[in-house]
Length: 139
Image (tube, rainbow, N blue to C red):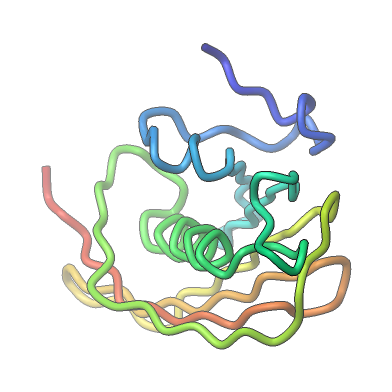
């Protein structure tokens, strides 16, 4: 099954990361690389909402983790990564129908450990800050 960003009212310049069924089930999530910095995108649907009819925090954390990992591997499936730790601060809610975008930045890169930060935003409003330690796995 091909998952297309256009089916979720997300720009066609975004890509779908193939092979992670959990991310497809939770999202689906999409990404585009802007130089070294990834930007992720996700459209909030009813099944992503909590009892307050806003985006569930677990989905926000999953999108942040996705975005942090893209930062660590540069958007390339040639480099496998795993999350060592992830810290999140919830700032504002996202509503049904909102386009949530993640913006990641690598802070420091060692031999196999990468320190990354990201923000999830709806328009220009930050809804979540996240920082993570990601381990690159040599294949």
